Length: 283
Image (tube, rainbow, N blue to C red; front, side, top):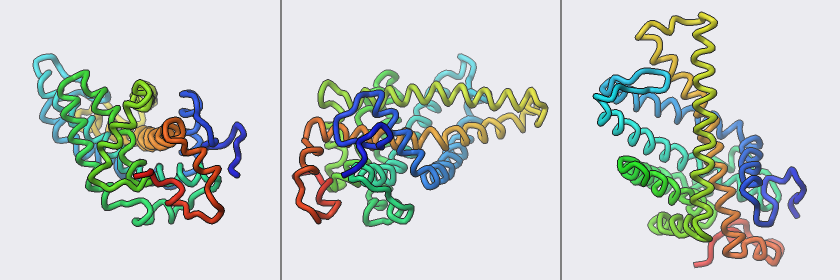
């Protein structure tokens, strides 16, 4: 039986919102040596992809704000950024979901297991992540609908990796799980994003202006400031993105315990049942 004490990553019972946030942090702490470097690569790629758009919209680092006259281009930049974030979190969600499934079964997954293509289904994840990104970007273009677009897709990676749902059914399953119980999963996902967004902004601004106060680099140089801001944001997102992916994984499993009796199913499963069969969704 897995540890069900206060330090358990995923106790076999429904969790409160606060416990879900704690579980996500514990999951990241246990697997940070893989998830954070992987996130760092993706976060750097994100900054490089956004750089040409930032030049076109003439935004000012470190928060990439613009004048009202260029509001339309800035809005498109925000939407594209939201879509790329969704792609990154979905990709990180594949190994995070695998790690969460192992934690629920009372063990710690190793790095090789979290990278194994068959278990993590990297091929399907790489195909689905851009679709999720496009849907979130389109929703972000419509303003408040970003909340809906982002909230509906938190279970894409867990449904793919843990539930073993066919790739063509993953988006619909994620949406169904997100709206269950008054939209609890979707609401937790948006709440987690907003919490980490506030933290990211605070830490990024602190690092950027801290470097400026220490005169380590000349941030008044228009060629240096954007690069410094990109480095800062990539560093901050290298922690925030895997944390959000871990939150998606634990929230998904919690939803399955609440609505599908996953915890009861695990307690009644015959000894020796393969792990994929234990966690796969009934179809």
